[in-house]
Each structure stands twice: as C-alpha cells, then as structure tokens.
Amino acid sequence: MSGFDGNIGLTPQLAVTLACLAALMGMMALCLVQGLNTRAARRLAQQEAERLRTSEARFRQLADATFEGIVIHRDGIIIDVNTALAAMLGWPQELLIGRNLLDLTHSSMHEKLLAHLAALREGHAQEFPEHASETFLRHADGSAIPVEIHARTMPFEGGNARVIAIRDVRERKAAEERIRHLAHHDTLTGLPNRNLFRDRLIQVLARAKRTGNTVAVLSLDLDRFRHVNEMGGAEAGDALLKEVAARLADTIRADDTVARLSADEFAIIQVGVSHPDGPAVLAARLNKVLAQPFHLKPGTDPLVIGASIGISLFPSDGVDAGALLRAADTARVRAKDGGRGTYRFFEAEMDRRLAERRALENDLRHALATEQFELHYQPLADCSSTRLLGFEALLRWRHPKLGMVSPAEFIPLAEECGLINPLGNWVLRSACQEAAGWPRNLSVAVNLSPVQFRQPDLAQEILAILRETGLAPERLELEITEGVLIGEPERTLATLSLLKEAGVRISLDDFGTGYSSLSYLQRFPFDKLKIDHGFIHGMESHAGSMAIVRAVIALGRSLHLTVTAEGVETEKQLALLQSLACDQAQGYLLSRPVPRDAVRQLIAEDTPLTRRSQAAA
Ligand code: C2E
Ligand code: CA
Ligand code: CA
Image 1: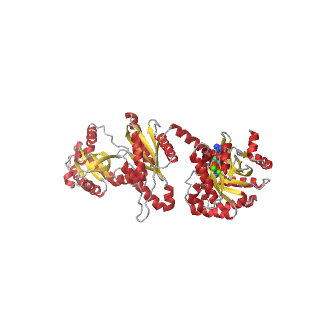
Image 2 (image 1 turned 30 degrees about the vertical axis):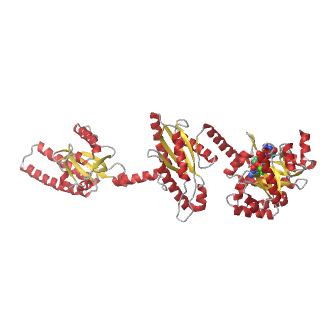
Image 3 (image 1 turned 135 degrees about the vertical axis):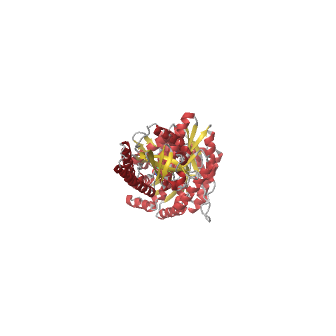
C-alpha cells in the first residue's frame, strides 16, 4: 500500500504526457494569435497537428494502461474517460462520454460536487490540494465505491478542462475496517474490547449529560472460572467464555453494549435507565441466565458456574467513564464477598472500605520483612482442674500507624494476596522455637489456613521446622478448619496422615460452624475437636446451643477425640462444661492471649487458671 500514502498524484508518466500536451496546445494558440498564414507556417501547423494527434493517441494509450481511473470534464460534462474508470464503474466507456459527472457520483456526494463545480466556475476552487480528497462514485449497480481523487485544471482541446485521477480504495477501506475491528474487538468472543467499551461509554455519557438521562454500568465476572480453566484446560475455558458472551449478548437490548474487558471480566452499558429497578432487573436476569448449566462438550458433565455483578449509575456514582467502571468493579467485589451469583449496587462506603483494604494489603506485604508480627499465646486448660495443658499461638500484627490489627482482618487478606505461606511458615517456626524453650513440655497449637494446604510439600516443611527447632512432634498441634477438607480431600488426607505418623496432633477448629460433615471425622485422623465459641456463649441462654455442646462432647468421646471448649468467658459456662465432662477449656475466663514473656511466668506458677484470674480481678 506504499503508493497510497494520502497524496495520490497522477502517475509520473501521465503527468509528463499531460504537461507535453498542454505545452503543445499552448504553442498552437500562440501561432494562431500571431496570424501566421504563410505556407511555412501552415506546414508547421500541419506538422504540429500531426504531432498533437500522435501525442494524444500516446496519452490515451498511457491513460488506458494505468490502474487509476481518469476522467476529463469541462464544467461537469465528461469529455473523456479511460478504460480503468469504465471498468471501475461497470459502464461501457463510450456511454460515459458526454454525461454529467453527477451520473457517476454517488447521490450522497451530489451536493458537494455541485458546490465544487460552482467554485470552479467562479475560479476559486483550490487548484492543488495538499491531499487527495475522498468521495464516493456510483457503480452501474447503484452501489457506492469509495475513491480517492486528485484533480488539476489542464488546457485541453482548445480550452481548459479538469483532469481527475481516481483511485479505487475499496480494498484498502476493507483492510482498514478489519484492522479497526481487531483493535476494538475481542478475538475470542467477537465482543467489543475494553477500548471500544470505553469509547462507547464516553459517547453515551456525553449524550446523557445533554439529555439528563441515567446510564448504568454493570461489571460482571464469572464465579469459579479459574476452577474451569484449571480442571478443563484453556480449551474448556475458551468454550465457556464464548458461550457466556453469546448469552450476555442475547440478554441485553440492542441499544446496550456488552464487552469483554479481560479474562473472565465483562461489562455492560445500559442506556435509557429511568429507575434503578432497570439495572437490578437486568442484573437479576443475567445472574439467572449464567446460572443455567453450560453444556460445553458432548459426553462431559454440564458445568454450573454463575456470575457476580456490580452496578454503578451515572451521574450519582461518577460522571466519567473511569469513575463509573471503578465504582462498578468495587460493587462487583462486594457482590462476590457477599456470596456468589448475586449483584450489588455501588455505595460510597464500599469504595472507602475497598481503598482501605488495598492500603492494608500493601502494608501487609512489608510487614514480615520489617518484623511487625508477633505471637501471643492463649492457655488451654484442663476443664475440671483448670490447670495449664498448653497454649494456642495467635498471630498479632503491630501496624506502625494503625496499632494492633486483628488476625480476623489480615489473615483473609494474606490468603488472597499470596502472603499466607511465608507468614504461616514464620508462625510455625516462631511457635516451635518458643515452645522448645519452655521449662515444661507443654503443647503448642498453631492455626493453619486452608490455603497453606495447597503447598505440595507442606508436611515436609513442617517436619523440617520441627527438626530445626528441636521441638518434639508430639508437642505440636495443628488447628485446621473444615475449609481445608473441601477441594482436594485426597491430597489433604495424605499431608495430614504424614504429619500424624510423625507424631504431630491434628485438631478440628471452630467445630459446628462449617459443614460439620460427620463423615470427615471418620476419614481424617483428628485428635481433637474444638467447639466454636458461638455455642459456648449460647449455652446459658439457648437450649439449642446446650444440646449441640452436649452432642459434640458425646461424639468426641465415642470417637476417642479430645474435646476443647473455646471462648469460655463465665463461671457458669465453665460449670456447665464441667458438668458435661468436657475435656479442655480455653477462653478469657481462664486467660486472654498473652505475650511470650508472660507465658514463662504462667508455666512457672502452675496454679489453676481460674484461681489466678480471680486473683487478678
Ligand atoms: P481461632 O483459631 O478460633 O482463635 C481463637 C480466637 O478467639 C482468638 O482470636 C482468641 O483471641 C479469641 N478468644 C479466645 N478466648 C476468647 C473468649 O473468651 N471470648 C472471645 N470473644 N474470644 C476469645 P484472634 O486471636 O483474634 O484470632 C482470630 C482468628 O484468626 C483465629 O480464630 C484464627 O482463625 C485466626 N488466626 C490467628 N492466628 C493465626 C495464625 O497464626 N494462622 C492462621 N492461619 N490463622 C490465625
Ligand atoms: Ca484456633
Ligand atoms: Ca476457633
């Protein structure tokens, strides 16, 4: 396309021929004016006329040989055309001569052409435009042909004429269109991409600012997409995305836009919103449509996924495209947090919380290296005597600005941003090291996050820490929740079995809050059940809680598991637990978690913990 760089002139040969032609005709005119009528002059004139005819014939040959169309007209009436133009237009060459230029111009351009001809007549048409101009010719079948034209005034057959070189740019236009499409669409699904989405949103917002209409932006991502990609491979992921795109496109209205922004992230512009119910209805319909099973490949199980949707509204949640998209994304994250397969509207409060969370996540990345973490230890006591049996290590983050941040807040964050493994290893190493230095061989319990179980060498890692710190495996208890057992039970079981063989004990934490599937208790080699503090708190007032605590203690006994009651805060709770012959107790009544230095003192005193806390009160 090198010759198409905007400025198409006439081809060099053609220009030279036309220039010669002009010079010759100029000379002839001069002869006539001077009234030379001698024989010599007549002969000269005959010779010149002969040369002119040959020259014209040569011009015609050359003109016909070029790929460009050429038309010569005088005041809009066609004097001559070359074969290329006739072919381009689908007319016989002879039929074109004598016609009006309007006949070969597409009707959409007539007004412009007439104005141009008028300007020519008055002598103020631009003689040598910098760039070729674009217009549309009319094919014999009525269709429009996009062309580039370049025109000059030339002396021709005794007067001035306009010579126009015409280049057919249909192919180039089609190529440009393909490139534009590629630049603005997602190749996998054919949906608009982020660029086009942004452009459309900017246009829609500009219009909405004038009309005062409300616009909704919906941000959508698939639940469990990563799982599909991991289990079924990229092929399954691609097939799913295509099907999702088709369902989305079918669900929205023609005026709305759906785009694929990244992997499994889609966004929708909903126009003509008169009430927030509009986006809510659309979001609910999208949730429903995407919750229908996907049949991706014959012979495989249908896939059930779902989507989380966030909604932002113009103008209340933002006035520009960027702000609206961010608000919709924030709302989508909240929709995901609040249970999948739902939608949420943006709230300013949400935005503030999310910004805080991002800042905290950033701080968390530096906290390990700058030693902002420490471990506190909460005693576990024998339920009837309240004598000390061991400690649970609980992680504390001393934030330089915020002070103590609760693990309930930063552990989920560490899990999300991939910091839980180094952090969990630090906890294990510190707790084992500390316990190895205690004056008595009490046990130490360490909490493990389900995410840590995705490390294939978790068991080896823990056993290495035990060797390094010199702590006897029998003194370490690992506290896990039911979340660990969901997902890949086989691998988890192998890890736990390896640890148990080495002598490490395994506790099931927060028992009663999760799925509480009793089958786990038989399949996994647990040593201990910890009853969630919620049931202990409810014991005094709720008959239901009391019944559950009683049942769990009985269950533990029948499976030969130790049962620990968590969160014991009152004498009454302790008395009830003692009456049910619960094995162990832990809670503020006995002791709050204490810093490492206080641990040695507690161990040295070796008095029943209730008596001690009474003394302190
Ligand atoms: P958890 O494992 O259930 O730990 C017990 C939580 O209950 C601790 O909160 C403890 O301070 C609190 N607690 C103890 N006695 C009482 C009581 O009588 N009343 C009340 N209301 N609460 C009591 P903490 O230390 O804030 O830890 C919260 C959760 O954070 C823990 O729950 C655990 O799931 C997680 N966590 C703490 N440290 C670690 C860690 O090192 N690794 C992992 N993965 N998770 C940890
Ligand atoms: Ca625990
Ligand atoms: Ca617990």
